[in-house]
Every structure is written in C-alpha cells, then in structure tokens.
Amino acid sequence: MAHKAKPKVEVDPITLSVVRGILETTQREMTLSLEKTARSSVFNLAHDYSTALFNATPEMILQGQDIPIHLGSLIPAMKVVAGYFGDDIHEGDLLIHNDPAWGGSHAIDTCFYKPVFWKGRLKYWTVCKGHLTDVGGPVPAGYNPNAKEIYAECLRIPPVKVWDRGQPRKDVLNFILTNMRARRDQEGDFNALIGACQVGERALLAMLEKYGEEMVDACIDTLLNMAEKQMRALISDVPDGTYEGSAILEDAGHGFGDFEIKAKVTIKADTCHIEISSPPQIPYFINSYEGNSYSGVYLGLMMFAQLPPPYNEGLYRCVSVNMGPKGTICNAAEPAPHMNCTTTPMETLTDAVRLAFEKAVPSKVSASWGHANGLNIAGWDKRHDEEYVTMVLATIISGAGATPSQDGWHACGPECCFGALTSGDVELLEYSYPIIIHRYSLMTDSGGAGKFRGGSGTAWEVEPLSDDMTFITFGEGRRIPAVGAAGAASTMIDTKVGRLELVEGDRQETIRENVIKVIKPGDRITNMNPGGGGYGNPMERQIDKVVWDVKNGLVSIDGAREDYGVIIKDPTTLDVDHTATNALRAKRAVAAK
Image (cartoon, rainbow, N blue to C red; front, side, top):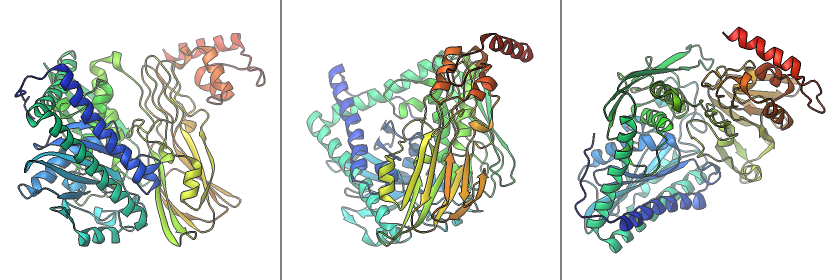
C-alpha cells in the first residue's frame, strides 16, 4: 500500500479548501460535459459514466460521486495502463482501454486516459470511463449469455494510444469503431469522453498556473492524508478480530447452481485485510476479473463506512485485499466470459463484504439493495436507415434497502450503481429508438417487508413499433429477494424478485433466465426489477404506515396481511380490523420463537 506523503510546504485551511473545490469542480465539469455532448441514451439520459483524477504516481486524487462499479476498478486499471507504457508517455497522448484482463471492469465500459503535463513533466491523469452501447462481438450490446469464453463477447482493447503527441491515430480509432454496431452512437460517445478528458486537463493546468506546483502538490497530499486518517479512525473503532460474511449468487437458469461468495475481514488496530473466497470460474458470463472485483469490495466497505469526503485513494491505504486464487469467479483468468460481472457477481460480492463488516459493528447494519435484472434491445431503425442498439438502464432501476431509521428509497438501485443511474425521460427514449414504452412504474409489494420497508422496484414495458426487435436479458435476483436485516423477512416472495413478462399475441410467458429472443410489433415485454430489503420485524411496522402503503399502491391488501399481519376489512375505506390484526401478529410472534 502507498505510504502517507508529508506535504512539502505549509498548507493553510483556506488554500486547501480552494484547491479541493477546484478539483471537485473539475470532476463535475467533466461529467457535465459528458452529459451534454454524448450521443447515446446510456450517456446523456442514464449517466452511465464516471470520471476521476490521478496524480503521476499514479494515485487517485479524486473520484467522482459516480458509478461505484467503475470507480473501484479505475485504481488498478490506471496503474496497469501507466505501467504498460512506462516512459513512453508524452504530452498530447491519449490512451484507450477496456480489457478486464488488463485491470478493466467489463469490456463494454471503455476508458480514456489523458496524461497532463506541466513544464514538460507528467503531473496528472484525467480519466473518463463510460458504458458504450456496443463494443462488438456476436450479440448486440455486448451481453452474451451463451458465451463460453471472452472471445465470444466483445472487441478487447488492451492499453493503446489513440492520440500520439497531439495527433489523432485515425487508423486505430477507425479500426475500433468499425467493429462496433450503431457506429454513430459510439463515435459520439468517444468524442464526449475525449472532450471530458480535455476539459479536466484545462482546469488542472489553470489551477497550477494560479496556485503554483508546490502548493497544489502539498494540498493534494493533505487531501490524500485526510481520507486515510478518516478511514483509519473508523477502523480503529472496530474491535480487533476476524469477521465473516457470505451471500448467495443465484443460478440464473443455466444449470450451474447457486454459488456462495464469502468475505473474511480481519481488523488489527487501524488496518483492515479483506479476503475473498469464491468458487471456480465457469463458462458463463458472470465471472469477474480482479480489477472489477475491487469495485465490489470497496463498495461493500464504503456502504459500511459511510465516510464524508474527500473520496480518493487515501481511503484504501490501510486496506489490503486478497481476491483468492486465479481462476475463480471473483478473480477470473483468461479466457473466462465476464460481461455481466459489473452487476453479477459484483452485487453479491458487495453484500458479502458489507455483511462481514456489519458482524463487527451490528449497530451499522442495513438491508441490501435490489440486484440488477436488466434488458438490452437492438434492431433496425427505418427512420434513419441504421441499426440501433442500447442498454436500457431504466430496466435495472430497483429499490434501495431500508435502514435502522427509515424505509428504503424507491427506484434508486441497483446496488452496483447505488443511486448514480437515472432513468431518463420516457419521451426521449421513444424519440431515440423505434419503440413505445407502455409502462414505467413502481411495483406493488416489491419492497422487502420489515419494521422499515424496502424501497420499491420498477416495471418497464416496451413494444417495437415497426420491425422485429431483439432483446437480451442479464442479471439475477429473480428467485432470491434482496437480503433484509435485523429480523426482516417477507412472506410474499414472488413479488419481490425480478422477472420478465413476455406477451406474444394470446401467449404469455414469464422469463427468469438470461436469454436472447426476438419479438415483433404488437408483442410486449415487461421487465420487473426487485425491491430493496426490509429492516426489522415486519410485525412491528406501525399499522398506519402499512395502511398508507396500501393507499399509495406500494403494498396490496393481501400484502398487508401476508407480510405485515395487518388485516384490512374494507378495501374502499381501508379500515383495519384491529382485533384480528393483533391476534394474527401475536400468533406470528409465537411462531417465530
């Protein structure tokens, strides 16, 4: 791990605050430029991208409050990319990379790295990562549930220069874009990522010009040390010992069975060691390479830690991680297929780490968020006479977990993105693609039951307008609901897990597997996402809160009875039979002992 750097000059609080503000504003300006200049709905509506700033070490000096599945993996990826080129980095260079075997997350998350030079010396890196709508391979949008190896998934891009000393490598860019569907979208998003890196470079150079290299370096060292100090203080308050957590990664219907992912957390003084144990990798797209798994581990840690900013690599100086042997699900080796890894198994890995920490400090326990259960679509758009393809981020918006003091937030997940994704306007999605969205709503009885209820998941129903449309499902959470906490348990399970409802003419089908199918105009598919887990005994939820949930469509009358023991005798007035309710709750309390 990196050692604490002592600032070379005295840093006064005002200058530190100003430099910190410039760094944070730089990062926000990078993300804003991505939103305003990107082409695809994945970027400009859903905001599935992340930005970060690194020093020349390279050490992350600021991570955006963006997508957790991107940010943890950027730390090892930046080191791999910088190490690969070594001294062959020059002013005006621009690098691209997406390969998980070279420290990336999953290949559809493509990253640009721009070295920032000051007076002829490398000072910083501006980094932008975004989820492209397609990255080549046999299946539109990259998610191939039938892939047995990584070569059947995508175009792999190891670290390569796309600009060399300020000159774009048109041959390299053309080679990459030629291998991607819906090239117009990909090229637009490439330009947005490149532009955001340049925006960050401009702001960092202006900061050096105004405050001087020595003072800026001292401020950055102080911010790294500040984050380290906060994490060490938190860990110091955790009793020394070893704590274990585990979570089940459910079989998505392809016959591999359920898998258990385990995390062992060892606390000693102000240091923490996290050891991951997972089964051997499988010929299915849920394997996670090491770089991606760091994101899951760090998210589980930060869900427990809940520390205030600054957020930088100093947080992890006192944290060591062992992902287990190579060739396992959480430390995959080539040629393991992997494309689903940023949701599955990352969310399960996150749960295992978080649960281990919460055994150490039970007072900080909270429920799991809904896991991703999503949908990609592709087809031909006659309006523009071109192919369209997109990951519909609205289809993975699930419920947040409840806490010891409040209900979970609705439509805020999935856990892997932790509130950073947005759905985008229905009208803009319909404008962008030849589809009609019939429904986008919260789902009744989807939130986990508890004294505090889990947040509700969402339903997204779509129909192609003019031609056949391919849809590809990915994710899990279709059998095992989000994990509750502190005695939370649901009786109605089926309403709290993900699934997809397909209507073809008079035929209806419920899909709980990851599949590739084609539907025609007039057919409809509805993707249903799980809710978040509940907190506490649901028999202790206030009756008036259960009635309010029923009134607002979050809980059904049957759900009030089955999950909360509340019997509503009049569906019109929602009057409660208090005698029957008290008797039912008392009976369940006895049965629970």
